[in-house]
Image (cartoon, rainbow, N blue to C red):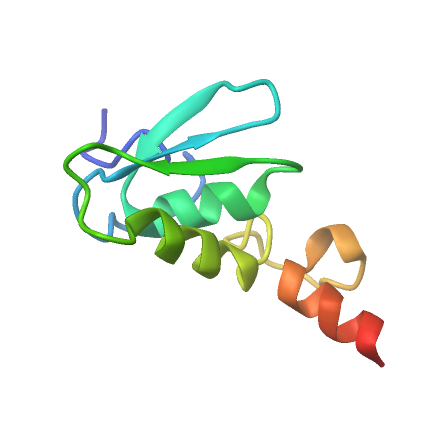
Length: 99
């Protein structure tokens, strides 16, 4: 363990953004607990996912993660051009659809 939360992707170089406060579940209900920062990045990278606050989490932790994930690109630590919908954030895809 490198001192980062379980939600941190091994290729994501960023440090944790605080304590572990939420659980992110994928479509099969497999999950990882994480800080808000890495949980948002993980949630943004999933095809379908959920986020739940842990019992000792501060108020609205899961909501903050959900909202941050909406504007975070999947696998945002990967460099390169991003043009396909699967490479853009949910917010970017909504903006494209509005135009």
